[in-house]
Length: 152
Image 1 (cartoon, rainbow, N blue to C red):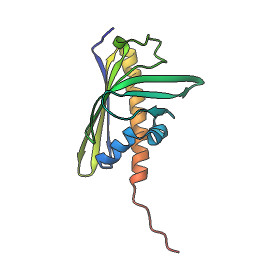
Image 2 (tube, helix red, strand yellow; image 1 turned 135 degrees about the vertical axis):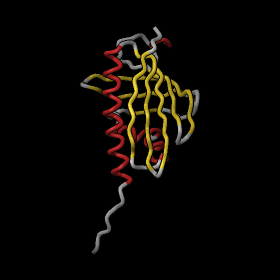
Image 3 (cartoon, rainbow, N blue to C red; image 1 turned 180 degrees about the horizontal axis):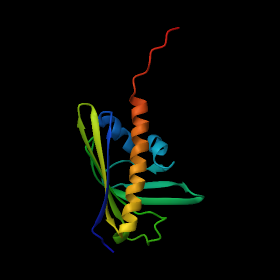
Image 4 (cartoon, helix red, strand yellow; image 1 turned 30 degrees about the horizontal axis):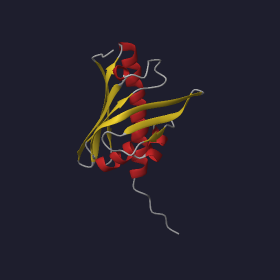
C-alpha cells in the first residue's frame, strides 16, 4: 500500500563530502555506525543492496535495489525490512535518499524515507535516522580530526 508519509533527518558533519560518501558506501564503515549491519552490494545503479545483521536477538536480512548514485551528492535506493512485519512486495518498499551538500569543508547530510505507512512508523523512522546520523558524524569527525603530534 503506497503512502505519502515521508520521514526526514539531517545533520551537519565537519568533513568534506568525499568522507561522508565513503562512509555511506563502504561496508566496513557502515557496520561501525549502522547498528552493526553488514551491507552487501556492488554499489551500481540497478544492483541489489542487502543489509544483514542481528537486532535484539533476532536476525534480519533487509533488501532493496540501488535507484540512483551521484558520487558525493546523492544516493537513493529502495528498501524493505524483514522486521517490518510486511510482505516482501514492491508496494511495501520505502525509498531512502541520502543527499549531500558541501560548503567550506563541511557537509550537510539529509536523509529522507518515503512511503512510510503511518505516523507512528514515521516517528520511529526519524528517531532511528537521527541516531544513525549522530553516530555517523561522531565516527567521521573522529577519523577526520587532526592527529596531535607527539614528541619522543
